[in-house]
Image (tube, rainbow over the protein chains, first blue to last red):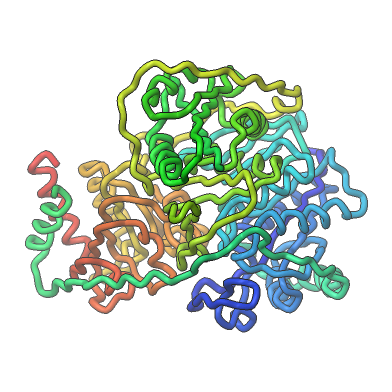
Length: 269
Length: 346
């Protein structure tokens, strides 16, 4: 395996999913209550993409991983303290909104600009990774829009596996309906891949990796360019929490036989 | 005046799947509600005439089709080229399509190419006073937004199961061929096949009437101080076999596998529902040994009737979320359930 890749991973930050999230109306549209106070994580699918990228780079000496992250600078710094200890990467920061209520087209435009500005960008080796959707907007639109802006015509979404072939091609497994995967063969980079979960566990923290990454992360944060991310042309009529609370009937002290009979009758109804 | 394009890809036999018929139902509804709008149907596939015939009586002003072997498989470059050509040929301002994996991949790119916008996972469409708005969920199905857009074309991908399917009689329709000049670069990717789990462990059935949700409790130590994973596997697989239900798993159960702990061998990330998993649509859901509060319960946000079996009568997964909570040992109950189902031939 001697095909070094230039892997660019796009990612953003999302609120810790265990936090209570409440929508509010801000000056520029919907937002989350106390959004800047909520602890943040690297978007989980972007995280999977990053770990897969690092693994691919490890297996292909000479490869390089660059994480291009869009979010409020303070949040990025907070998240990089943890993510930076996981796997080695170079870091490019874009200081802008990571809200789910922004337009993915504007996010994609900012990411495309940052990728095109990467020094030594080699499209013949370029693989652009990201999550197949975000845990905020949950749309799965950004990566394809980014591909169009970069002029890349090979796009895969819901990727769980990328397997390089000796001839420079690679095989991709994408999630499709019914718990199945579509198998495709692409003749080689450039390509855009929106990852689902892949197959790798979250790497353990490695202080040495963290030290090495931090040498690049802090300067990157300092020179993070402001990215104006909004939602032009998009109007929210409402954003609401689901209100339905069910009247749960609690069945206690019933024997397994009685419960089983009731469940079977309900299934058949 | 809006021009509404129903965009659909055909199945291997040239017909439209249920998700496409549901999208047609939505497109027809929008077309009827928006005064002065026109309605066009467009198809992509290796064989499209059966699809046009299938919905011949839907009232479309015309039927357009990009047809050929290049468009048989789900591939970004060719699908995007075909959809772009159909949108241009129709002069579409609103494109309504099923949110299948194939269209989720390509249509947002086509929207970008045409200077429009795409909204995926749309669960409802409002048409009031000639205004169009869509409903979709944010932050992992934790809040629902109603939104509208000024950009055109506006691609609206409706989630399968969220719309009423169009019903009408088939007939004969003349589908107008739309040509697409594919550059050789559009064929850099070749679809070589589909990998599916062996029949014995095929546990995801999107069309099943029941979603069976397994929680981490199945692999925990039981009253005798031991875990009983093989027994749990047998109970669950027997139940799936007897009921043909679909299997969902809480995130924690799937993640245990990555941490090297004992898990149910047939579970994969594809079974995962909830925060970082799927939010499938089924008429009924039965959860067993699940626990957790609001963020974890989004996995069955779109399940209509819900029942749960748990040893914890105060479990946040079930209280206020399920219609019925059975405070009982799932091992015992599911054993009896399987016996009853087997005895009656399910």
